[in-house]
Length: 467
Image 1 (cartoon, rainbow, N blue to C red):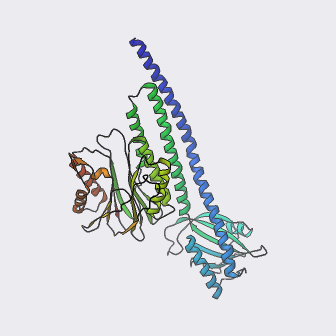
Image 2: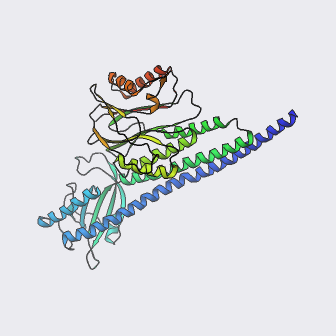
Image 3: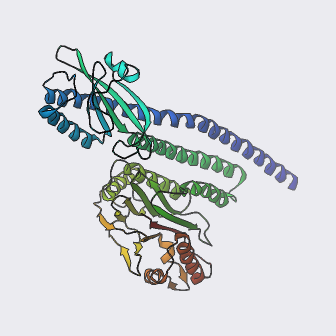
């Protein structure tokens, strides 16, 4: 009888091995197709953006420029009233669409107008490249590495989109060529956003297929491995959720994640910091209710949804409102997510922020002043429609922001909580301005308070303004 039972176990193990390898093969094939699909999709989005940009630019130029010149060709550098009329139209267009520079050329290659002093009027150019194609009636665009024309010496060079647009009179004859330079940041942001969405989809799909595979093994080989397998999957996914940049211009930051000492499964604490463009920094911390694979996948979806919306808006309250509507539709109200989310403008040193039921971020000034950044709104996922409050705080150089999840203030010693007041008092006494040292001091204080026995995950992120 014992020998028969042993053979049965061996047979189940073999079936489990085959099933697991079959699922692994599906995952490998999916990833092999997914990587080029992600690149293709993001490039497609970029090309659609460029096409849309070209159409918008053409519509503006053909209408407003003709109005400014009465549809007549400009063959010599503009002066007098004509210069005022064209300058007004060009200034308005540059501000509205964030163009870097606009040049107008005659068909013989003479520069008749420039929105900057970068190029001397009256100079001649060769009829080649995009300019030559525009003379044939084609709208062309190409990417060029160039500095800022308004900065002496050009400043830092960035990739810009150079677009040539032929201007025709009523009879269809080409009378002038427009040359427009636009920063590529919006295109890069779209590529990043589209790739983030695709990668998010692949991660969720990967987790689902992996879970199905492991479930099959459990059914075949027994249920004893279930908790350990789920923990391994969640741990792997958790690692992908807390990948952070090494450096961002204008700020210094440090971060740490401590799993609960007695946790059987992984929770949904997360944080992220990301440079949206040259002057805006995205920063977020959050905590998903529940444990395991579902919490981890929801964490990924929330974080990447908020990041994606941040490229189109600089209002944290509006972004959180759109996110909570989307998450509620996708997941219902079975899980909720607390989030503190801010966008820091490095030009103005202004932090715009909103909170979805998350513990307040603590602001420590260069002096001993300590302030809690508080808004009282519902977590994401509880209701479909929530109007979030949005506040602003002007920061100064060396001001410190301390982000944390509730596992820190709810850390226990017996029946006593570490608490928010204790945390504020401790931060007030810290004298160092080094973010890594501040982080270590806070974490060590909590671990000492609990004798290294955390009952919940703890995520902490410390950010200091350095401009």
